[in-house]
Length: 318
Image (cartoon, rainbow, N blue to C red):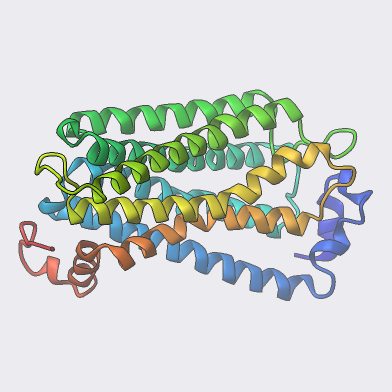
């Protein structure tokens, strides 16, 4: 990729800000290769990690429970981030397609918004499942209810993606002052991130309060008590949500307040925050591996090839 090719293809909006000097200041070809290698490695780790989660839950019958089906749906969303969104974003970050209004960038934006929204909404559903498991253990989420939640999650995510694209919002949009459409950006961010994040925070605060109250009780009835496994699952998924907020919050705050900024922030900053948000899909499997003994056991059997030598679907993992 030559510097001349970049200058010809960059949107005129960014020529006003000497955009070419921000990206590849010295040797574009070497830097492009290095960035592609790093981002390609992130994509490979994301795909492999989430494939392990998916394979574990699908193969081992012990893991066929509603909570894990929700985790499976989350892993599928994260896998699609690695397979679809990462390559599109790599091209968006490294090549001169930057901020053009074309079909490629619209497709990229649709998949980015849809899959990211699905990942966020899946986390919201998982928090609801944890709420029932801890606060109302006699009305836990069933397999059928989990299936409905997963269907609704993906349907809503697809509608958010379609709505964002039809509204004209795109990371390729460039208006008079190089600002994206404020209304579509804010509305999209509210429904895709801020509202689900607020719901999750409220649910986990409620769970924490109930858990503390029950832990401090002199006597906890058998039916109302919180098992060690439930506490660990809730703690793990709370950490998943904490990592999610750490990765996602800066980017969504940036795109919401971007139209209000007196000066457009450097492209490198926006892209760094975008990749921080996408890296959440890579980190989730590592959290499972660190906290879930069943996932570690399943990974050992899968990576060693043991599951291909016989039928181990009924193996007790924990």
